[in-house]
Length: 112
Image 1: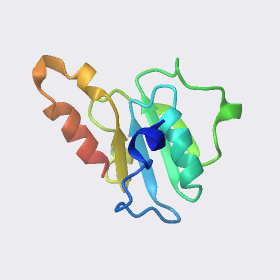
Image 2: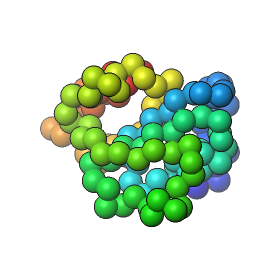
Image 3: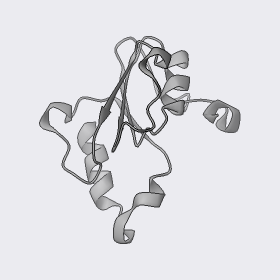
Image 4: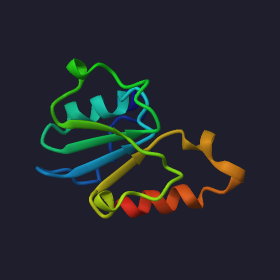
């Protein structure tokens, strides 16, 4: 989907190499992650969402994807702080509380 709309999964100026760690927040059904896993098979992709309800069956998930739960409004767990080279988010505009995106942005930046 992203490739069709934008022409790429990640902007071409973002280097992705062996061992690049990419987090996808509010990953939902993992559509972006699966596209990214095909494009970057040597990267490690970790998807996070508030619930596992939309996660696909594990048989459908490429080996370089890990899925887990995380609430973007809660502090980032210490073991995830500073662990990622790239953080992807999509459509979070729908969950911004009180018109203030700063709590979400602070948590996204903590992952880098």
